Image (cartoon, rainbow, N blue to C red; front, side, top):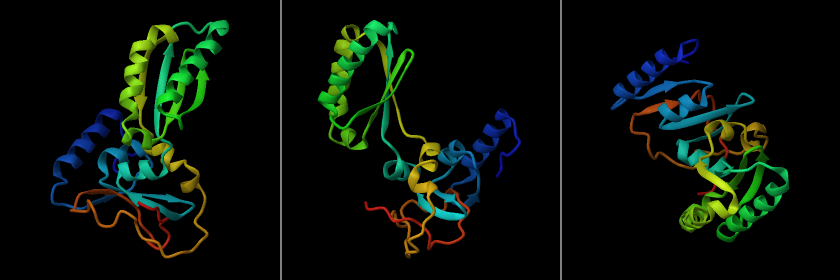
Length: 199
């Protein structure tokens, strides 16, 4: 773990150094900082219960094990009497464009929905964002933002937390794509314990 016990400024300096000199080299490092793995790793292996549970690029792991995109709406007026009415109006607008969306949090000034990755591929987000822009005031929303699943959430997903008891001979579903001697974040003990995910 190259940045254990290092202050944030020095940590960033180490990252820059690794990123600068990784071309044409294979660098294997282990870390418990998922943001570090996300930034530095072309291929990431996650170990749970002493066993390798998944391997792939950051994007691949997020698509396979992540919950989707988070849409956060910031309410203008968190007054309880108006809030539930506006929340349901917001939900109706979102579900019209992304039927599989679900409200996961209604806390203070913010509403958070999970939007599945498949909706982005279908182009539903474009229409949703246009509709939200037009109806912000009517819905009592001051702003909104979208964020992706983090690698930390992937690491804590049920697929990574439960030990692999199937004992099947699995390999990385992503194959050898993207392994041209770049940075890896891995401590690989046995490729036999990798979960297989359909493409």
